[in-house]
Image (cartoon, rainbow, N blue to C red; front, side):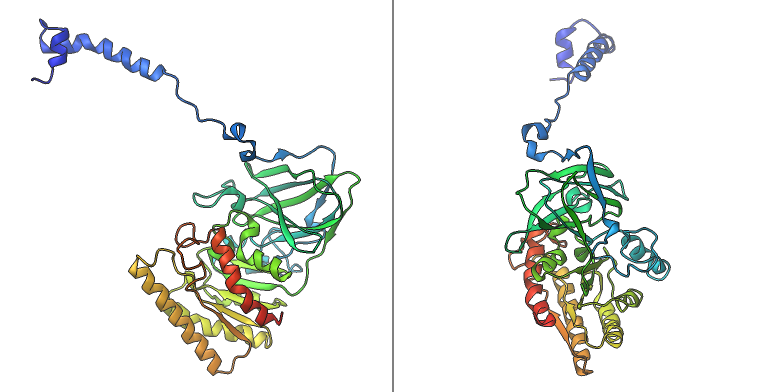
Length: 397
């Protein structure tokens, strides 16, 4: 059967080229009809399920309280000049640390404002630096959200609500209908975005008290995982979880892709009055770099802080390293390099040095990561559980 059989049925006595000319108007009409057909619209999920929508707009005529008036935890060396108030490193770090570390230090990861109020509703008004509010594998609630916790009547920290940012300026009601009573709150700032300004709003007449940052934080120096990738909310990073469990302030110096035991970062670590240092940089380092940099960094810290606990952490394994031999070997070699550095330091007589193994930091069932590398909320909880006994021992708790 020849290729133009259908056309021959329609136009049996016309030459082929004539049949094609006659068909052109019909084909054009068909194309126009197809283009004119209404396209199916995606349903508005927030109408189908209101809980999937954004936060309500903030109420009018609130009393607004700027957190810079009393300070946030996780912001080191507050007496030193800054390019922007919510930067993690002071202005003097620009040009000393690498450009990548400097840029990443402008994210507000780990910062947390504490306050007391008896308000039945809590509102926030804040601006973030970057217009990219989320990532392909990390939601806007984690990248750019603010996350609220409160103490219950027994003094235990419990989650309350998170913002759902849809723009760089967020002015919303976080929650209403709170149980009566004066209580303490903790509000975590965005993880992978910089914060330009931050205010907390309560209705007029409500009692409100900003709580000053607590002293002697546990200081974490690490990678994207420490930075918070890929937590669904700022309060779900293991550093924040441990801060609540230990009831202590924490400092998050995680620099995504760039936590490499740099002496220049060490120069700022030694300026802190830390309760403990947690060095968790292996995911960004090769075994040769670990062998080169670990011992000098610990010596640098120990020379400045003779009695402060130092915890070395092996890198987590990719959750699919069981089926990727090259990655499995990389983790094994990296762990061996850190163990060798630890043994060298112990042989030198370094005291109060602790060690966390990495094989099961995300658990042993391959379910603790978002993308094999970065923790899910489950992976962060498992990391916190692995860190807790070592930190308790190091801190004497």
